[in-house]
Image (cartoon, rainbow, N blue to C red):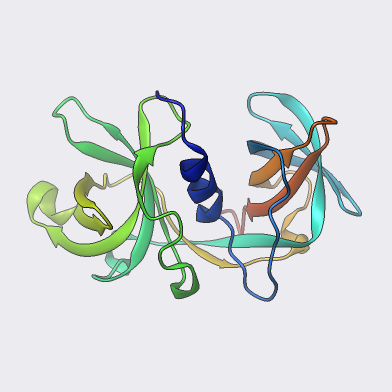
Amino acid sequence: MKALSMKAVIALSAVFVLVLNAAVAQPQGQQVRIRGTVQKLDGQKLTVESQKAGTITVTMAPNIGINGLKEQSLSDIDDGDFIGTTATKGQDGRWKAVEVHIFPESMRGAGEGHYPWDMPGSTMTNANVSGTTKIKDGRTLELAYDGGQVEVDVMPDTPIVRFIPGDRSLLEPGAKVFVLAAKGEDGTINAFAITAETNGVEPPM
């Protein structure tokens, strides 16, 4: 997978920053994405057992953006919705959705485009739903973004979620989280956005 440009990294960061009540400033430093399980929340320190890097403690910004999640189905996606989807190529050469997340209207346009993601052979597409084709029993989304369009097949078992407002109460031990953070030159990791498990619905991205 090609290295991402700084513009692309900034766009990817914007994907999951859901600002509902306050502006969240992104810390300076190397972009870090953490997928794992909450071990402990102590003040502004969040300890996560990462899937790849072991135990990591991050410092949360005082006004950090926290997203909750609501389980959805394909029928909950309407033409004109702005969504994001991680996808990989199937043996038939078509894009297959690994997950789909529906953005609130306030995030329309965030990270718009079709570009490499950090799972092997994957892309992220943030785009407007322009229709649902009859291919694959009507489970193919037609997605249009600035500069192009793409079709993504949504499998019956593909997780689909909607971003909803969240807060620190979601960061209880055992909760699954997806954390966007920045690693400073001194090694400290400062989190500026978190998507957290909500009522059993885990972050699929």
